[in-house]
Image (cartoon, rainbow, N blue to C red; front, top):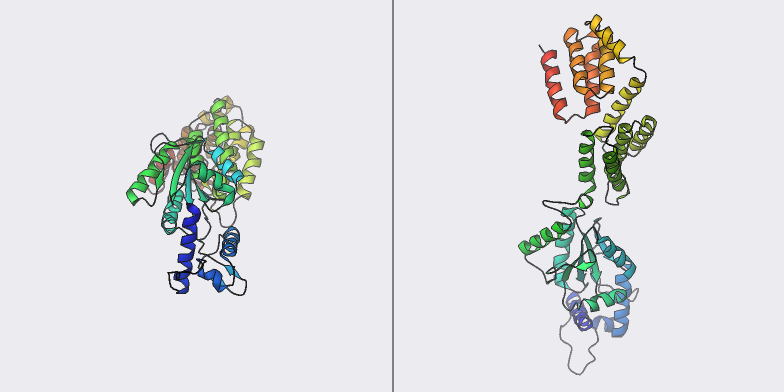
Length: 396
């Protein structure tokens, strides 16, 4: 039974740490030598141990007996710092995790502080949780926690450590592992768990890391027009999910907020977009990289504002036709084209300005192109091609 295993292991650990004999002399009460050292019974030792482990899971090191406080202290590894590792303390906390298994699998790690193999396995599990970045949650369950005892009994946990994966509220077949598996078996185990979340060929969007989800949503947003209202709403939902995701970094959230601003622009809601992008900028603290999408949306806002004040298209086109080399007219025309979503034509006109006169109006043609590049995103194929064309004109 677990209780007997715990008592035996506690005594052995105490003897080792204090350099005492590991055998209890015949005829003597088999109480823990540590308890004798502090003048307490074995029951008191158990109580002190339980009080310590409940209150000090973040401590590290081993102080077996503290005569000043009459406390027995056992080894306690640092509490998990990962966002995807949960040190379960109550049935309510566990219930919340299991409800989340509808979307994200939960790997339950049954352990005890006195279990040496558990200490071997624990860092391996936490490392995997970090590497998979939210494809699953790791729930660490201390079998010594009386509040969680019914779970261990129901699942008939008799050896430690034990792993079991829950998905959609049910135990995953063949997901039970007892003991410390070899590295290859453990790797295959997490590949299996990740596949439940949709990873590695068919990954569900809601199980991907926030940064990946928001990047994919931004990429999709670039390819759709203002008439595709349903798709814009779907992408808005992804940005909102990232904003509320506890796993999101400040940069992820700032990027998602800028994504919402871009969605507002697609819908023609210029004032809302301007407000949202202000929020995105305010979310960038001194230690947070400013996402490129913020500059991109700001540039789009500038051209969108100018579009509202632009002249009649037919009149502008006649003006361009009648004065092909009027750089001021070409500058206004390129800006109007870009604001209307005709970026390829706008780039052609702006490059024409540079070709006619590089230095005109303090290099206004080149500066206009740079604004276009900011608005389009510097990593796009269209921008890379346009930069090459600009370079060819500028240096020839």
